[in-house]
Length: 231
Image 1 (tube, rainbow, N blue to C red):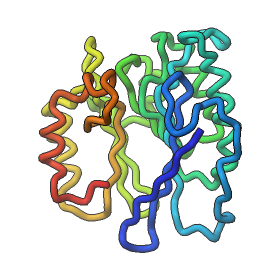
Image 2 (cartoon, rainbow, N blue to C red):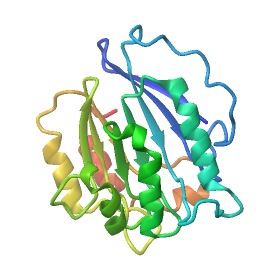
Image 3 (tube, rainbow, N blue to C red):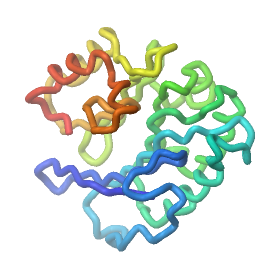
C-alpha cells in the first residue's frame, strides 16, 4: 500500500514520500494490496530522497492475534516485504498508534521487525501508545530530556521534526505550549525547508471520526507556521 507525493525545495533536493497503514484504516490502496508500486528511477539516477511513512499499525502483544478481525502483524510483514521496491529509502517514519495493546512485547517485536532500518528509522506515539513503553523500545531514536516524544533529523536538504500530539487519557490530540515553544525556537532562523510529522491530522480532512479528534491547539501551530518554510 503506498501513495506518493513530492515536495520540491526549489532546487534538485526533493522528498518523495510513501505511506501505508497495516490496520483497517485505508489510503488510496489497502495495506494487504500486493500489486506492484509502479516503476521507480534506478538507484543513482534519482536526485530525490525517499521517505516511507507508516501509521496506525495497531499491533497486538502476541503475533498472530487480530485487531478487529484484522491480522495486523501479517499486514505489517506484507508492507515490509514490499519496501524493497521503494529502495533506496532514506528514512522510515512510524507516526503513532504502533500498538493497540500497551505491552512491551509488542514494541520489542516491532523493533526486531524493523532491524533492516536500524540507521534510518524514526518513531512517534499515537493515542493508543504508551510513551513509557515507546521509550523503552525506541528511546535511542527520540530526543532525550523531553516530556514529549520528539525526533529531529536532517535529510536531503530538509529538516524533519516529529511532533507528539498525544493527550492522555483523551483520544483527541494536543501539542501543548511547551512543545510548541520548542518547535518555534527550532524553526528560527528560517533556513532549509521543513517537514513535520505527527499522528493526529492538524486539518479537517472530511472524515468525521478523525475530524472530531483534531489537536485542540492546532490553530496555535498554524499561526506559528504561517508564512514559514514548512511543507
